[in-house]
Image (cartoon, rainbow, N blue to C red; front, side, top):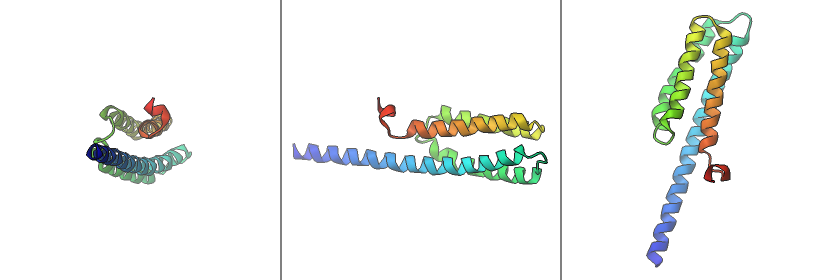
Length: 129
């Protein structure tokens, strides 16, 4: 009886610790990517878009996403991550064709999808029930 109780406690602690670590990593990664997306968005809203700044931010964004994606794929549904990646690709395509309004729209979609991923993976009563 005592062994079973200890094993159960160890399992619950391990699951809780794993959940905390993955939530913390996802939150930090999403926060960093969202900041870069906001920088791109602010630059695209300007009447005189500085393409060098946007290109630099998009390159940084791609680098960050390529570092984060494989790690997040372990504990987040691939479907959700692929939606974000598709939105990034569409945003880049609109930007390269100088369709800034559509690029901003896709950028907002990316921000929404990342916020959805963060909320979906948080430990809350809503997500439990």
